[in-house]
Length: 257
Image (cartoon, rainbow, N blue to C red; front, side, top):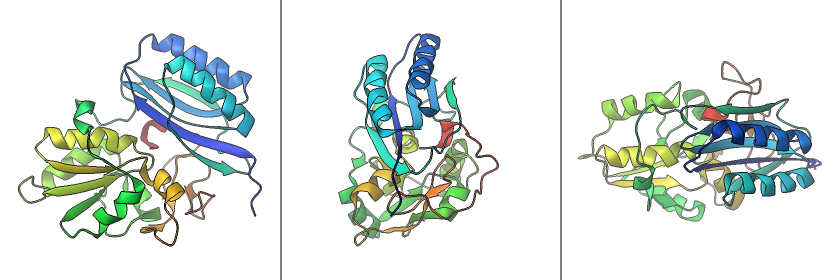
């Protein structure tokens, strides 16, 4: 049994932020003072992060971050024998997940499906199941029956939709990603361009693996994660996948969820 000594949490929120440089410095200071490593992406539209540390330090940092962001963090948690990060990165970017499209996030209200309800969608033959992640992530593992858009980056996905899907033919579309953030942006985008029945897996693959028993799971393979573990298995422990991306040396959280 793996000794669990390092806690890894991933979290994000679309939330209007101001004074980003000030927030950036407060986050860096808190991470240094509490021996927490990882990546945080800040933008006017919100924040996106994966960090790691001793469980007692993660408990402290959650409270500190909630004060800085003035919110209640909704995070996914897993454990490992060592930190999957080597440094502290707190970056300011134009978007917390790069789609390069104007999106009204509010259009995504009502599209979320819980992990417990997700299997029913996968079994519905009328549903087009879209893996919104990149090609190398799909190859490590995906849901049964999911379509691989064969993208190299998230911002390529709108072109795939334009060339392959039609609102008149594809009446129900269910989508998923690692931790939920890509779908949080892409579900409302799909609504904007005319697709009516859109469903997104709430909390992403990580929350599904955390809550759905293996005996009921329709997940196949492992889940690619953007840290030095490379992948996690159905028990959210370090998987066996080799690095298939061009760079994984403490890379940006920009694509991680």
